[in-house]
Length: 90
Image (cartoon, rainbow, N blue to C red; front, side):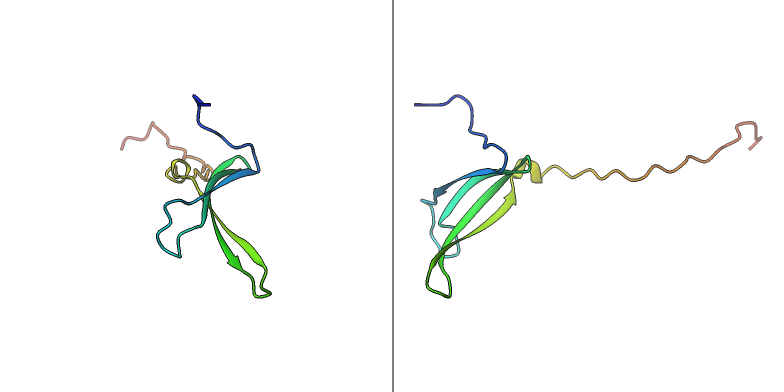
């Protein structure tokens, strides 16, 4: 079944898939997308073994490119404009 629109995860959910293009041990075993507090994120996952011998999944979250490219606008406090007297001769 083909979909016409791209998948957008619901808030505070994610989907991971096996990374079929992994060439180095440092590259993630799993990759996917998610949404955290309304922000789209890229998720990378590595299968590892904990010091107690149990398997674990280590995750990394990064902002999606389209959001990372947009600068975060921080509103600076407005300063009062100086009061100029237009009747001055100079």
